[in-house]
Length: 617
Image 1: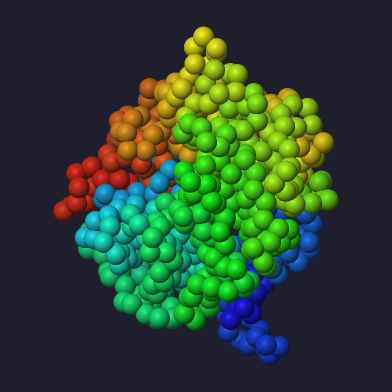
Image 2 (image 1 turned 90 degrees about the vertical axis):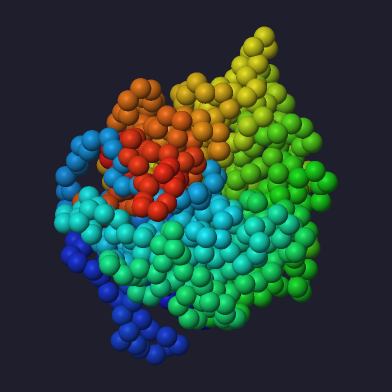
């Protein structure tokens, strides 16, 4: 079972070794098992989901990344995604098309959407070519209705390809109603298996949570075939082991606590999932995708008691760093934690990164980053985000910590400090009451680490002592490193918009071989406020998007409808159909005047949206 997952990354590693050669068609590698040769062909595919960018090895030699991939294939996926883009651009010299500012497609999700700090998941069947039939985007939806789909898979994504997929129309390939409990919803991000045939996710009710593994259709249906629609979904069959197409396992995580914010992290090598709940406990589940019956670990001091505060124990998604031997995560009260990976009852550290016990926005709501930085090789570094820092003089903030931090590690601001300011209500250290979501790193960081790279994060405009801004409006920060520590010295910024109370979604960056770009949504969930999707070119600073009036080359907007976006996932640069971004809208209605409604559905539903990256430049 474990060997299966090791082989999957080996196939991708083989693709990396081919990157110096011209790709022509799909590359195939024969698979071996238990020391014996096999003639079974397998694809060079990989998943991209919420977890993809939270574990980084920037600036590393390919052979070092491949060695690390023996334990953690995300390292290999991240390198492949960037290098394939660079190599294909070099060899194919793909034309850069100037596209009109419009939505490439929008598909109805009816009453469901992906929350602002959660992500859809993308599966790419082959690293060397897009595939209309097998590549898909998966949306897990926050919706309580049991009559519509809450897990939707769309293929025929590349409507701008030559020739276009499905004559230019995306296809809802499969749609499931996975609700097993009254009021059950998918509030967090799904996680895909390495071969794209299964998905793990959490169903949450108001007071309980359940872990599911669903076996997706194989092969993925292509037009005119479908396994359900958004309005008429399939209901999975119940099974103990996830081995049969269309069957879904159900494991009770907790009957007395919901899960509002913790997506499952899957350790592919050990086929183990880690997921938190709103009671402050971190759970370990194994197996996940290997074919056995998922079960909660109840020995070895699992589940681990992480948060014990009385006010807000809701945990973020965990990030597993097996190099450091720790699991990192935060809670809604503002504490940041390190949990021992092997023995969770020992070597646990708790640090008040947020201004614990104070107003809204002080919590940690997004998962941290864990970085193995060759420019700072003594120990891995972790980065935690909060809308209200515990450090005096800092409002919203990012704290950078060594992976071996303890509960007594100091948090400081200024030269040589480890916390930077992302704006505050009065400019004197108080807070806006809104959240800061995950930032991202620029391509220079991926290439050189903290030697010349930058972190990008969306915080707030600071008010003054005479005119506080609580809530404030969002502001983007481009932050360098000095002596390998994040710093505001030499930083640059731009104001995102003038709407008080808006938050940015988590940030997404991608380098296509020529241009480094930043993508993000901004808005306010469920308010019906103006929402935007913005793009910025990254050089030695950030270009400020123009986002007012009619749509521009850096901004997609839909007044009183879009409401902002979910987290954004991307394609890499492979063919004329690639280099796209995918997200869901947070409010119902048309997007840039393009309706996504279907016959028999809501007149103004939420939309799944695809947009070509090069239009946002």
